[in-house]
Image (cartoon, rainbow, N blue to C red; front, side, top):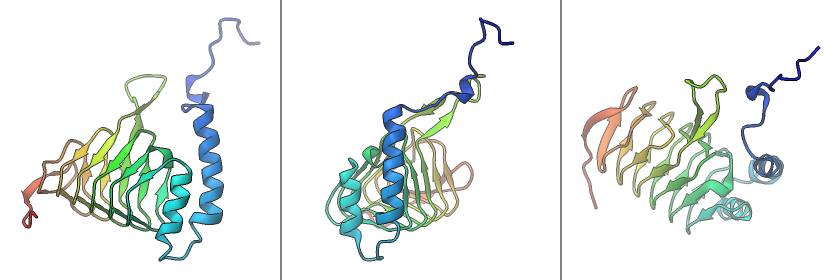
Length: 185
């Protein structure tokens, strides 16, 4: 017998809006049927599909068929952005990627997590900004709310838990500054 004062378990309640869940379901079908099986050089086709779902993409973006974009409507890319096969863009909050930035294989941009200090474990989201000419190397992770400065490099497997300075190279877990980056334009 259930008490009349019984409150539903907050962890069993949806953490996103119905509109978001429906949008992601429709996007999931389009991703599986039209985006994922597209030929490798069909960047314009994939960009068009993403734009149909609200992504704002500049010209000459190369988003590969194996890239996973959770919510296209929360993706903003300037011109000449590359998102490699296996990259995961978990964009519960807005993710902005600057001109000529590269997101390498199996990189993970994660704009949401859960509040581990709250027993209800609510979803918390914060935008991510990747600066122009930045490079998120293979298997690197960018956490919610982090800004990666212009020209910054997040090395292989590193985890950015705080903002990264422009034109610097970071590595480790958590990422720490290793050096200045050479080759500013």
